[in-house]
Length: 114
Image (cartoon, rainbow, N blue to C red; front, side, top):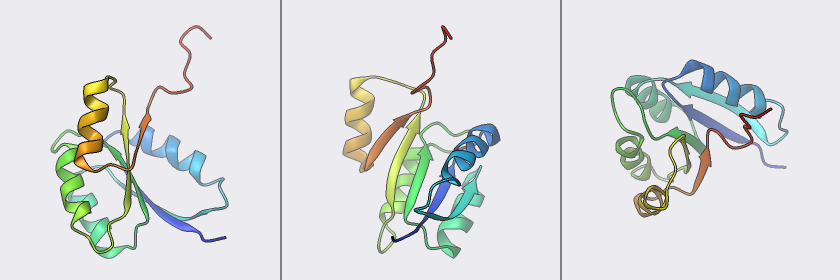
Protein backbone atom coordinates (compact mmCIF):
# COMPACT_ATOMS: atom_id res chain seq x y z
CA UNK A 1 0.00 0.00 0.00
CA UNK A 2 1.27 3.45 -0.92
CA UNK A 3 1.65 5.71 2.09
CA UNK A 4 0.97 9.44 1.85
CA UNK A 5 2.23 12.65 3.42
CA UNK A 6 -0.33 15.08 4.82
CA UNK A 7 -0.20 18.77 5.66
CA UNK A 8 -2.69 20.04 8.23
CA UNK A 9 -3.30 23.78 7.85
CA UNK A 10 -5.37 25.33 10.63
CA UNK A 11 -4.69 28.27 12.92
CA UNK A 12 -6.24 26.38 15.85
CA UNK A 13 -3.71 24.02 17.42
CA UNK A 14 -6.46 21.92 19.01
CA UNK A 15 -7.98 21.16 15.60
CA UNK A 16 -4.56 20.22 14.18
CA UNK A 17 -3.81 17.99 17.16
CA UNK A 18 -7.21 16.29 16.91
CA UNK A 19 -6.81 15.61 13.19
CA UNK A 20 -3.26 14.38 13.76
CA UNK A 21 -4.34 11.96 16.49
CA UNK A 22 -7.01 10.48 14.22
CA UNK A 23 -4.81 10.27 11.13
CA UNK A 24 -1.75 8.80 12.88
CA UNK A 25 -3.72 5.60 13.43
CA UNK A 26 -4.20 5.04 9.70
CA UNK A 27 -1.89 2.66 7.81
CA UNK A 28 -1.92 4.78 4.65
CA UNK A 29 -0.38 7.81 6.42
CA UNK A 30 3.39 8.19 6.27
CA UNK A 31 4.16 11.67 7.62
CA UNK A 32 1.97 14.45 8.98
CA UNK A 33 3.12 18.05 8.87
CA UNK A 34 1.38 21.02 10.44
CA UNK A 35 1.06 24.71 9.66
CA UNK A 36 -0.70 27.25 11.85
CA UNK A 37 0.10 30.37 9.86
CA UNK A 38 1.13 31.43 6.33
CA UNK A 39 4.87 31.29 7.10
CA UNK A 40 4.68 27.71 8.39
CA UNK A 41 2.53 26.82 5.38
CA UNK A 42 5.05 28.21 2.90
CA UNK A 43 7.94 26.47 4.67
CA UNK A 44 6.13 23.13 4.63
CA UNK A 45 5.09 23.16 0.98
CA UNK A 46 8.50 24.31 -0.21
CA UNK A 47 10.50 21.75 1.79
CA UNK A 48 8.29 18.65 1.94
CA UNK A 49 6.59 16.34 -0.53
CA UNK A 50 2.93 16.72 0.34
CA UNK A 51 0.27 14.46 -1.17
CA UNK A 52 -2.84 15.83 0.56
CA UNK A 53 -3.51 19.13 2.31
CA UNK A 54 -6.32 19.47 4.86
CA UNK A 55 -6.87 23.22 4.54
CA UNK A 56 -8.93 25.34 6.92
CA UNK A 57 -10.80 27.96 4.91
CA UNK A 58 -10.89 30.59 7.68
CA UNK A 59 -7.44 31.51 8.94
CA UNK A 60 -6.42 34.60 10.94
CA UNK A 61 -3.84 36.21 8.65
CA UNK A 62 -4.88 34.80 5.31
CA UNK A 63 -7.78 32.84 3.88
CA UNK A 64 -7.47 29.23 2.89
CA UNK A 65 -8.52 30.20 -0.62
CA UNK A 66 -5.45 32.42 -0.93
CA UNK A 67 -3.26 29.50 0.11
CA UNK A 68 -5.10 27.26 -2.34
CA UNK A 69 -3.81 29.38 -5.21
CA UNK A 70 -0.20 28.68 -4.23
CA UNK A 71 -0.94 24.94 -3.87
CA UNK A 72 -2.38 24.74 -7.38
CA UNK A 73 0.88 26.19 -8.76
CA UNK A 74 2.96 23.28 -7.42
CA UNK A 75 4.03 20.55 -9.82
CA UNK A 76 2.38 18.20 -9.16
CA UNK A 77 -0.20 19.94 -6.99
CA UNK A 78 -1.33 18.06 -3.89
CA UNK A 79 -4.95 17.10 -3.43
CA UNK A 80 -6.71 19.68 -1.25
CA UNK A 81 -9.52 18.94 1.17
CA UNK A 82 -11.19 22.05 2.57
CA UNK A 83 -11.92 21.86 6.29
CA UNK A 84 -14.60 24.27 7.43
CA UNK A 85 -17.15 24.96 10.10
CA UNK A 86 -19.27 26.95 7.67
CA UNK A 87 -22.11 25.47 5.63
CA UNK A 88 -24.18 26.32 2.61
CA UNK A 89 -24.59 25.50 -1.05
CA UNK A 90 -22.90 28.73 -2.15
CA UNK A 91 -19.82 27.89 -0.07
CA UNK A 92 -19.59 24.40 -1.57
CA UNK A 93 -19.92 25.75 -5.10
CA UNK A 94 -17.26 28.42 -4.49
CA UNK A 95 -14.84 25.90 -2.97
CA UNK A 96 -15.28 23.49 -5.86
CA UNK A 97 -14.84 26.31 -8.39
CA UNK A 98 -11.67 27.34 -6.55
CA UNK A 99 -10.29 23.84 -7.09
CA UNK A 100 -10.64 21.90 -3.85
CA UNK A 101 -10.85 18.14 -4.23
CA UNK A 102 -13.12 17.58 -1.24
CA UNK A 103 -14.82 19.23 1.73
CA UNK A 104 -14.96 18.11 5.36
CA UNK A 105 -17.08 19.86 7.96
CA UNK A 106 -15.46 20.36 11.36
CA UNK A 107 -18.73 19.51 13.07
CA UNK A 108 -19.45 16.28 11.16
CA UNK A 109 -20.12 13.49 13.61
CA UNK A 110 -20.68 15.93 16.46
CA UNK A 111 -24.04 15.81 18.18
CA UNK A 112 -24.75 18.58 20.67
CA UNK A 113 -27.53 16.50 22.26
CA UNK A 114 -25.23 13.73 23.49
